[in-house]
Image 1 (cartoon, helix red, strand yellow):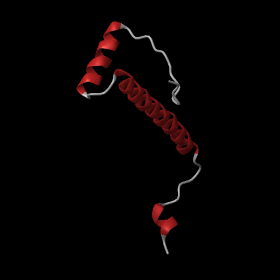
Image 2 (image 1 turned 90 degrees about the vertical axis):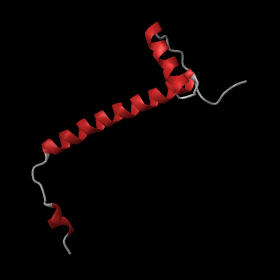
Image 3 (image 1 turned 180 degrees about the horizontal axis):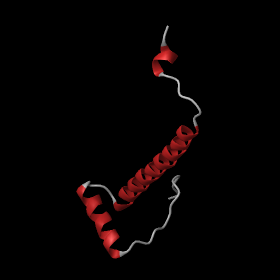
Image 4 (image 1 turned 45 degrees about the vertical axis):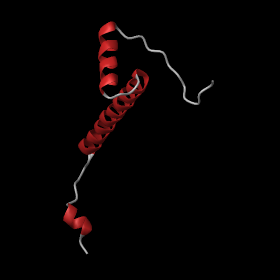
Length: 74
């Protein structure tokens, strides 16, 4: 039966496969679902790192800072 979700094939060494299988068993999920969740988490962490670097660069390029109270005063 065809599926809507794309599939990938990943080759793991025995140690990594064992760790993944143990994690899946502890959470009572399939190895595939556990791997997908870990990949999503890794991608989110990678995105956070990239955005943090971008933000740090913007902060270092700022010419002047405006005080928070000055912006929001009535």
